[in-house]
Length: 174
Ligand SMILES: CC(C)(COP(=O)(O)OP(=O)(O)OC[C@H]1O[C@@H](n2cnc3c(N)ncnc32)[C@H](O)[C@@H]1OP(=O)(O)O)[C@@H](O)C(=O)NCCC(=O)NCCS
Image 1 (tube, rainbow, N blue to C red):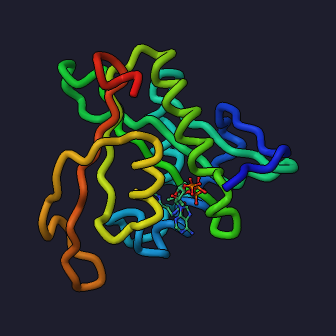
Image 2 (image 1 turned 30 degrees about the vertical axis):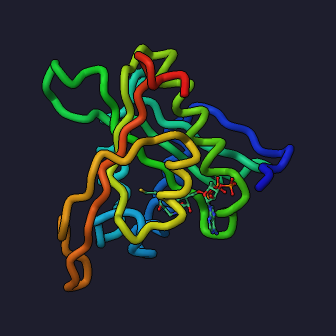
Image 3 (image 1 turned 180 degrees about the horizontal axis):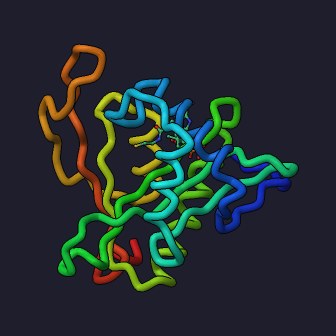
């Protein structure tokens, strides 16, 4: 899959929040990306934005002036011991999936994390999210294990796969 030449990646700004929320809500609606089921309101997205900064960065993919995807480094936990770990999110607008945008975003997010001195990226993918799992495999995330029946969506239990990508040590360059 090829990304278009017109694709640009940059740090997100507050002016991107509406587009970020719309793309996030498509992922929630599709029921493959997250255990969340309610669309994010403007207030919730603003709260989410407040939890990000230069270290826990948000980046956007822009094509011909339109935001078509975003990815973020999220605080993994409030504990000091976990300060060098970030949880990852990546969402691509429905009509632009399968064209390399997710991989471009994830690759740039990894570069950003390395620049910021993070040691490790982690994520939790729904077991049935085939596209997400392939994307993470391509980005060299390692499967840590599967949480069985780890969430309930629309009345059914789903398994959740824990994955990690080391940014330092022997696995970092792989
Ligand atoms: C998961 C998601 C971010 C992937 O982004 P994307 O731009 O569609 O992915 P890419 O085009 O960069 O593809 C990366 C890899 O994923 C796989 N993939 C992507 N689209 C695919 C499709 N339609 N069918 C099968 N595999 C696919 C391929 O292995 C691909 O690698 P390749 O280019 O070498 O073939 C996107 O589908 C999305 O936003 N989904 C909804 C939100 C979501 O699930 N987020 C992840 C939460 S854990």
